[in-house]
Image (cartoon, one colour):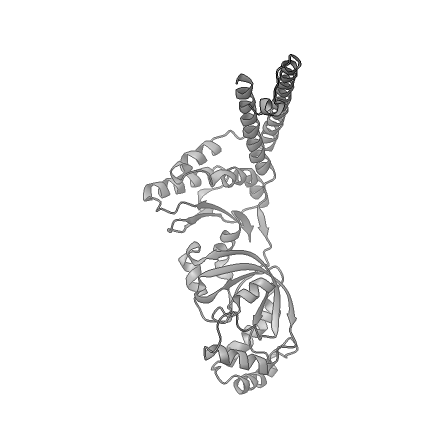
Length: 370
């Protein structure tokens, strides 16, 4: 029994050391997602959700008005001709200029690497994807488009019973799908507009916060703390969290550079933004962000202020070298424990062999398991 107790304790200690090492490895390898300053943000609708599943499953998005293609002349001199063409082919359109601008944006303004928000029927689910290359599906003619859209408008077909008839397409890489309850009201209200394509540059913070815990964009550094508790977070807890996190980040930046954006719903994010974050600040923030984001998910909301304070109260010399030394120490302790466990295993085997040699009928495997 004593051997068994020692064996269990040794295994538990090794598991603890491994968990600690994983934690420190995460901190050392933590990277802040840097978004190119030229990146833009868009929303593409899915015709009342009819094409949502097809878009996500087949990794593409598409836009209506098949008579307009990449070969279309969008110059100012051709605007009147284009307007007449649209009014002739799409009698339901009242503002042809809007259609022209949206087609031009889809073909020319959306770039690979841009972020696309794609809602399903009723915007109950929203997928965020990276835009890819533009292409055209030549088999999707104007006649096919008119037929399919007419059936949808008349409700002759159900979702998934027809495929997307649009010619203008872009490849996408889906990144994350969220429920509408996971996004803030400002972004949800924007998604509710009816336009086939909309520019969402004003909502970059809301979109990136759904994808990355820490990210930088246009000299802004954003740190998102996710509160996963379903029950409401009390106002005192929320205020303590805001105060503690602000106090921590003020150690490396002036407070007038910090702003906070809170989703009052629970679960929901608490998004801190540091404006005009220079590269040196981003480098310094990697370890701090890794410490907080890396472990915040296992901390109860009530404990977050104390947790943050304990992390950021570490002296300035606690840096990558310190963490690397700590990790090396953990590695040595793990190897020592493993060696100790091997010795104990050998002792158990020797004892089992000795008992068996004295004529005792012993199941060696059962003995080791004890």
